[in-house]
Length: 426
Image (tube, rainbow, N blue to C red; front, side, top):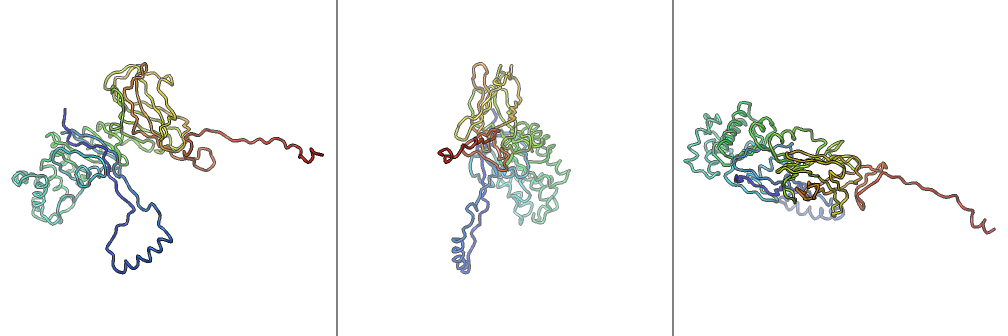
């Protein structure tokens, strides 16, 4: 059993936005504050002037020693924040990180070097930070300088280096000082094609030495050639954890109509012959699922032991735990003789009657004959329904005191007026 080099559990990083920092105040400022307070009392500012943004939220995974893992995702997905958390550059807001071994990080050009120090001095400083002795660093010094191709400038302050020279030296230091874990962000885009090839070759060499590599890149060819495993981040959350090839295919697939969520860390029950590890919500129009529009729930599963007559189920609940809808494959006459390999199953819901809101999903697979659960994911999956004009009145309706709507119409019938009482009394 391999030992984990990196273990992450429910990791999250939150940033505060919309906050005004306090600054030094002069006497004039303080006098002005007296009048400002009176004005604010008469005209108070918006209540929610301070907001929070989760760059990384509820991320869990484990990386074994010697694994080469690629991290992919769109710009703003949280990749760089994740690497900064793992490199201990920034502290997490919540969750836990366990690191086994020294980390060498190359996150962005300029990180880790002192601009006033020479290349030589920065090499020794970086090695000292990693806990290496001067003798150990000296043995690697020539290889670092040769790889970076900065022999003529090694005693020049790095603030005078070009971005390419700076990058070459930074990568050479991170790769040659033999950290147990090498973390590389998308900085290779700065170098030329020959340098990128050289760096990828070095990372491949590092991985073959049994060291762990975590590599963020938008270069899918590099990820496929270098990595055996892939993680996809989407809006700060872990959307996929599997083989590099699967991660690339999923990342390159147009996402406009798909919401993806990874379930490996979700709470579940069952004996584990089959495991549902990911689900997708596929809309027929765009990434948002609006009230009244059809959608498909796709469940990806792994088979750990061949089973006969399994049946899958999907249930939709209210936030208070009220079950709104539940269906098994067998309910629709869809019977599966056996399962012995991985795959996915789709449930297409054509005319949903759910109003806008957030609805927990329960996903499961069990034995059709005995209802014995192989896997039941009951915390984590959610269905987000956006408001829409479900009644065609020009107004959007959300779930308030009810969750469902039906295609219906009102009609009013007034009976013929009776003769007035005055006439009747005549």
